[in-house]
Amino acid sequence: MERKNFLKAFAVAAAAGPMLIDACKKESSSASATSTTTKSTTTTTTDSSSCTLTPTETEGPYPYPGGELTNPLDRSDIIETQTGIPLSLTLNVVNTNSSCAAVSGARVDIWHCNKDGYYSGYANQPGISGELSYVGKTFLRGYQLSDTDGVVKFSTIYPGWYGGRATHIHFEVYVDSVLKKTTQVTFSETISDAVDVSTLYAGLGVNPIRNASDSVFGNSATDLANETVALTGSISAGYSGSYTIGLAL
Image (cartoon, rainbow, N blue to C red; front, side, top):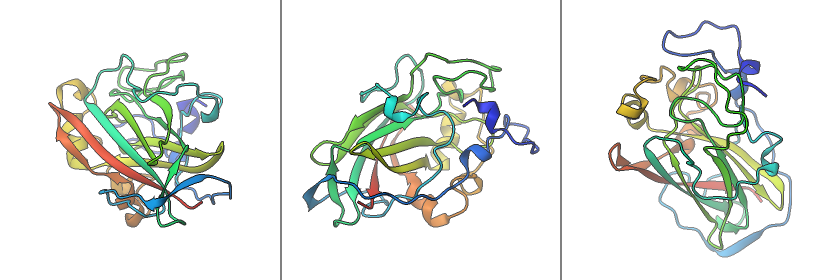
């Protein structure tokens, strides 16, 4: 599944590359019932998505080739050799049908583009450095199993952007090897805009696609608020944030 398969014949903003609108339209799905392990205590978090069912979004382009369940990259640090502003994410997996009890043993998969807008594992990706291939590469993707508190942590870099999409990160969550949630998250445009013009990211410039006009995040203000991860930190020190993934189990 290559980036060019997602392009539509729409006009392109001057600063943006080929658009990927069809790849990232919002779609709905219902979670199937399955067994899982939940703690009897309620998870306490500080982010705005606490005890809220996480919106379902399209998988979008560039999951692990062959599907996320074939991804062998069980790791917390997904950076490899990529450069960028450090980003630390703490994800809390909870069951909204059980007073947001923590879900242990859930598999949380993550993937996103590098600072220049390219994903690992795929060829024929147009971008600021021309059409590049990263077949066989595995940077900025991996998975973790949630601990007894329903928590997984990832060390990564702040993602860049590519034509037609707001800055974003992809997630999939599996319980007992059954897909329970596919979603995407974004960040404050104040932070993203500052990152985009920082030294390492300056080749991109500010992303012309705003969160509210993005093909995934833009059709529901409520969902966008839930999918915007609050961050602390700075360009010099890096950023960190937490996000609660609410599953209806």
